[in-house]
Image (cartoon, rainbow, N blue to C red; front, side):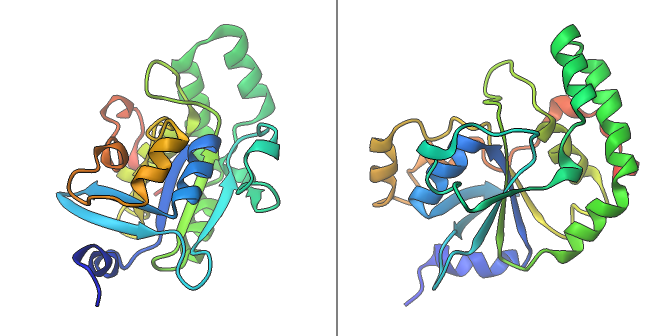
Length: 212
């Protein structure tokens, strides 16, 4: 018999895109599911059914050594049209000018709009797509995945087609927590619910026309 959380997955009826970092992605796959509070509803998102119900993708120009990220090794591919350019990344490392980075990356998104739309149209309903890069954004670190997430939230083309989830990347901190969450209490499990599906209010620089 299905639980209420399992029934709620059917209510999504959309592809599910998760933005996080490499390490958090590996831990999520270890757990096998994700609890999300979005739009005043709770959802349980399963990463496995009869077989893996997810695909994992890098949106960065490089990735950490994968020998300790077993779920990413041999399973992850890169989506180039979400990556910043090498020149843009180097300029940001040199001058640490986030406003300039945002301006230039928004132009990149506009230039790649057709490729992004084609990718969105290819996504399967109720399948999970995990998009990974480097930064833990819980404190002051900035990351271009924040900008993609914000663009997806305001774009008329994407916001109604896919369920979009943002994670800072530090929500699950220890292997002990991973083991505990496999025997979860749905309403009390704040460790997984924290910061899932929240809108990034600080990134209102993104305009709807960036994607369409």
